[in-house]
Image (cartoon, rainbow, N blue to C red; front, side):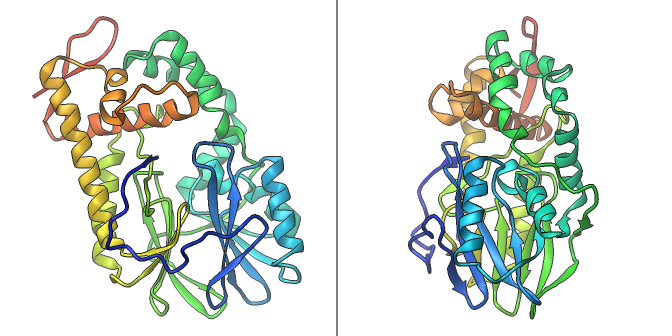
Length: 348
């Protein structure tokens, strides 16, 4: 995920995040807590909504000792006496699904996710060694990563994908258009692709309240990456379509509860800025490829403005560069060029 300036048109009803072990009531019956992450993006938001006889949990944090201790502090502190009733997870990334299985087992909860997100989480957990096998290794090498960088990426860079407790073997499928009652509130289930294949978002029209997961955030752009299992995919095209669809569906005064950063009002303005952000990255890629053929690895510093050495960050940066390349290839604005032992791009 990358950071850029926040539009002045956004409003932040809660200007300060909850402290460790604290839960802020941002609307009657809706609590916001924050869990630490051991990455550059150092936190994830979780939400708790009054349900029939307790609280529905939205997202779970990563599976490590610090996150388990954070949940213990919440459950014995501000949430004491209010038992979890269900576990809703927006998408399969470990900072959101990581402790879902642990919480479901501990409190005998049902896990609700979209089918695509659940199956990916289950697959990664059941076969983690597949991440280091062919054709994934060849996928990175063919796009210009050195052998050393590829091995580091497949080792340390993808380690975070294993920070997930075993998911339940059954789940409740959430689909776009479903209506979900949580306590007295009715939420419409929305789904969007790009950051993940079928991310779940929830909209309560009566409260003008939108739980967005990582699809949109105030100060960072969600990572939109091509995955090795879908090397010719177009997640950026899917993401841009999702933003346009959400702009048409949501009122301008909706309160957005994101997976990271602060809750905000001003969805359309933020969506427009993200669309412009990706347009600028596409133009930077085209300019570089007009000058000379480029591999995807060579385009990483073009769009991020610097070399990226940290393996965890390189996973996202490489995937995001390729997402822009695939988008431009599909639009006919880039074409493949001959390259020794791999793939290079030139402007069409």
